[in-house]
Amino acid sequence: MVDAARLSKHIGQSWDDEIVPTLFEYIKIPNKSPSFDPKWAEHGYMDDAVKMFETWARKKIAIFPGATLEVVTLEGRTPVIFIEVPGEGKETILLYGHLDKQPEMVGWFDGFGPWIPLIKGDKLYGRGGADDGYAMFGSLEAIAALKDQGVPHARCVILIEACEESGSYDLPYYVDHLASRIGAPSLVVCLDSGAGNYDQLWLTTSLRGMIAGELKVQVLDEGVHSGDASGIVPSSFRIMRKLISRLEDEDTGAIKLDALYAQVPPERVAQAKVAAAALGDQVYAKFPFPEGMKPVTDDLTELVLNRTWRPALATTGMDGFPTPQNAGNVLRPHSTAKLSLRLPPTLDAKEAQKTVKTLLEKDPPYGARVSFASDKAGTGWNAPKLAPWLEKALDTGSKAAFGKAPAYMGEGGSIPFMWMLGEKFPKSQFVVTGVLGPHSNAHGPNEFLHIPTGKKVTQVVAHVIADHLAGTRR
Image 1: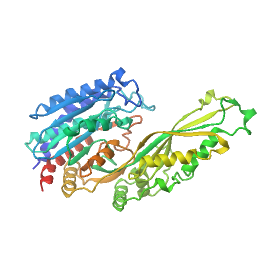
Image 2 (image 1 turned 30 degrees about the vertical axis):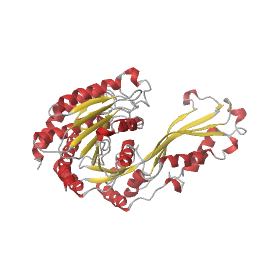
Image 3 (image 1 turned 120 degrees about the vertical axis):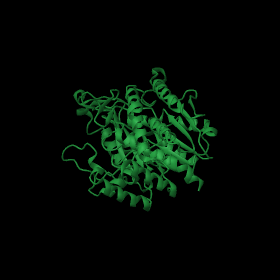
Image 4 (image 1 turned 45 degrees about the vertical axis):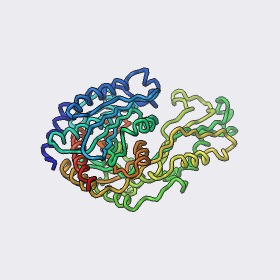
């Protein structure tokens, strides 16, 4: 049996004395993911972050007889940290996180910044603390807190990658390389997800997939005077708008192609209703809307389902456009838009990629030169049904740490590792959770880690690891 009060005290002390100070220093390192820093190896920031994590973890695992840590580096790829903590029985728990970061982004508060750690109240501001620097620390501390009470657990493997924000394209090579050492985990714990609020544990039941690519429309070989050409040469932007309208209804935002939808399982609809009721207006109010702006519908359950199970398009970048102050009377030769299409969790991303490419490129208006070059296609993930022991453990852990039962909801983003693990280990149970609650703003400005939630999530993970051993022996 776990002494919940003692567990909370142990974990809280470790967070205050060890974890938060280390994360404070980690935030200073601009170790952007390879997609955002092609010269990451040359710059050395990723190595700095790995070394910091390694140094802390080696001190922590010294309390576990037989525990090992290795920084594994395959040629030409970002490194991973691989930690093994021996345990009882034949089962294995795999705990996952990442340490690479999103780029800077503009819009930080005065005095704040992506590489400027700042503690304000219960929040640690800066890039990477919540997404997902805390994961390794929380995972190891959960195991250490059990050892403090002499509570047995299964063998634990911790895998921390450095490529997640780039789509985890290096990770499959490491999973294959380390396959014999990982084994076949009966439980996977991922601490890289979101939270609907900071009042209870939030379990992620699904993740949307995504395809992304550049839609380019070319109408001329060079720009010409708009007074001379307009009315004769069609605008590349107008053609691009028309092509995007093949995919998206501009009045509602709904995706037009039936092939890009999937049936929402009844249990996910039921969970969405419960989550919407728990969150209320925070379903949409957590976003920084300007005054007078409204969400796409007033139906809270529909908003949850839109965000978690329905396809949605975002235009995340544009090229071929001068800045307004530099825009002369020129009919531009081309327009390029970076499109990001979120997909239902169970939809095949590769097939969706082909469907969208065909739709956008066929029969181009006026014979314009049109291309859709898609560089990303990741299938989503839908969690398997929870085993009775795990459902009970999560309930116990959430009530002990948060004082409330857990809530269940899908996430709108992607964690490529989950789909990969789901395919490789179809019999595994999954606990996917995190600290990214309202306004924590991962990937955007003013990202923060809510420290009390980090402590409480660590407590829940400890309860689950403890209960796993008995649960898998039944």
